[in-house]
Image: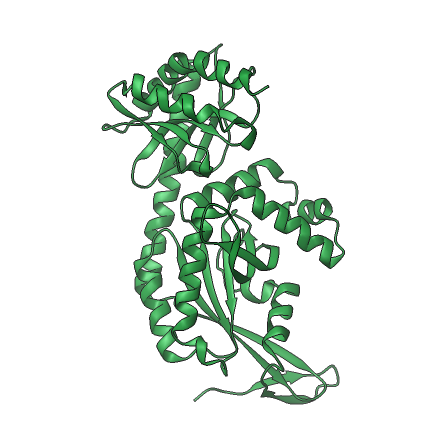
Amino acid sequence: MSGGIFLITEDNILVEMQSSPYPSEDALQSMIAQFPRLLSSCSENQEASKWLLISREIGVPDNENRSSRWSLDHLFIDGEGIPVLVEVKRSTDTRIRREVVGQMLDYAANAVAYWPIEHIQSSYFAECEKLGLIPQDNLEKFLAGRDEELFWKSVKTNLQAGRIRMLFVADHIPNDLKRIIEFMNVQMEPAEVFGIEVKQYTNGNFRTIAPVIVGQTSGAEARKQAVSLAQRQAKENLQETMDVFNQLASGRYTATGRASLYRQVKLPEFPESMHYEFFHSYSDGVTAEFHIEAAKYNSVSSVLQELAREVPEINGGRVDFDPTWQNRGRLRVVQKVRSPKITAETMLVLIERTKSRIGEAIAKCG
């Protein structure tokens, strides 16, 4: 049995609020877009509780052509740069049971594969225009002094790593959907899955909103704690690797950054979007890589493929070309033995062996 909801007025009058349905699904969606704190308040992480609305009804493609097949109700980005995918249903909608789960998995799987960071940024600018907001001012207010470039970089990195949050939102979440959410939240990593009931109470003059989170089982909490520990260890490993590299490469190259999953080595003769990078993945640990992050230099990927064939091994590590990275490709060295010293030495060799060929390829792009 659930208790009532009461409001005490300034005149010290006790007002009992009655559970009230939303007039439409759009009314619930609009309220969430206007007040994302209704959802983010359920987060225990203070940084993660700050959400930026990217777009309502954002298109999700199912192939590399990027033509939208589906439409996600809301996309937010939290303070850690984690994409938050939100699907909203009223309890009266029969699709809230099983169909909504399939929808969300379609959205998540294809967003990770086919959403470039440019699409997310352009969607944000378009949404601001619809809302009459100045995009840069709104973003600066959200970032509160943090670096904009690093923010978008963290969004891209989290998306590529599958580090996303999926939220099922309704005025009431049925028990069968709760069980599915709890199961998914325990099993999925590094993605998170939650349900949030956003209940509404009214008495004719006042309205109260009471969000309640669903899916935080003890198993899910234990998994999140393990993931959090792994993230802290990853950041420490990255920092140690960067420090060792900067000592080895003193006077020649410098690794910089404070992000959780990467550190960059930028050569002054290369454009900003072309750089070497220490990147941490949970499967391979810290790897030495080279990234193409602008469409203008897509043709450089063919040179990266050639280099992977010509230099199959560096410092005992396997050299791979990954064509799926941002649909442009990256060169990476995966070490059998993981240590900051070996990875730092590997990066130094990778730069020396590849920078000349990559520089020539960049020059041909004009």
